[in-house]
Image 1 (cartoon, rainbow, N blue to C red):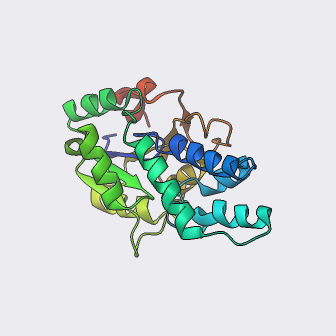
Image 2: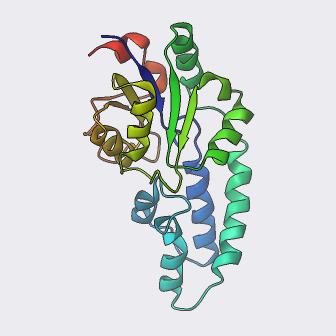
Length: 216
């Protein structure tokens, strides 16, 4: 059976944006004599810019027992994490897989819970944007994963015989709810999470081949 497309998650799969974010929150909590809880981060995965993405500050305020300046602390955190993210290279094996799939004329798309400017900007910096025929990102009409809407939009554009590559339970749930095969490649922050919903789990994107993706 032919492969209609391969859909790539972005944060944590193509680019490690998640480790810098955790480090930035850890530093902020440490400045207040506290540890940043793992359970807060696990709830936040894929939720940047949403109510869940604001959990660290609401939790910090609750732990301190006093009001804090959310806007000021969020801006300081944003500056710190973005500076670290700008130094991150593409994740291992990603460019090689993109090259292999392009050589075989397989359509490629990014399907991300982040917004388009974020994804486009980093793909441009990494020199990867031209590999993709579409960037399907969160919008007013396309809610974040684990809702299947982003992947359903990708299927409508490219066809149903596609494989999603994800790094987290929310992404896997979204892909499976959309009726897609899903490969998981956990990163250092998601490897301890339950990825059993994926069809296959790999240690690195570099382990995935065209033959693996085409095997139905």
